[in-house]
Length: 193
Image (tube, rainbow, N blue to C red; front, side, top):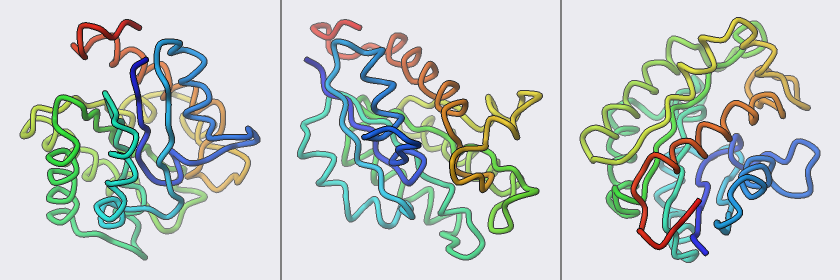
C-alpha cells in the first residue's frame, strides 16, 4: 500500500465531529490503495513544521500534502513572506519535491476573521505556487478554487463557525482536489489509485 501523509495546521488536523481528522478520514474513503496518516497540528506554521518534519518522515511516505499558511499569514503570528517561502522550500527539500504536493491556504470569511485577510492569504498562496514551480513539486490552488465559488463564505463555516476552520463542505472541496492531483501525477509505477 502507498503511504500518504497530510502535513499541516488545524485545517489538516480538524476532526469536525469525526473520531479522527476529517481530511484523512475522507481521503482514506476515496483512496483504497493508500494508507493515510495525519500530521496536522492546531496553530502550526512553517517554522513549527520544520521542527516536526521527522514526524512526517517516520511514516516513510510516498507522497505528502503540505498545507500551511493560515497561521503564517495571521497578523498576530505573522511569519514574514520571505521566511514562509524559505521554510516551504526547506520542507520540500527534506520531503523531496517528487513526493510533495503543496496546497495554498484557503480563504477566510473576513466578516468573522479579524486576524487574517483574503488579500494577505492570496499573497501567501502565490508564494506557495512560486515555491512549487521553483522546486518542481506539485501544487493545489485551494484558495483560488474556494474564493471563486459564489457561496464560498458558507463553505468556510464549520463547527467552530469562526470563518477560518471550515467543516464538511470545505473538505468536500479539498478532498477531490487532492484525489485528482494524485491521479494526475506519476507516483511510483507500483502505486495504483
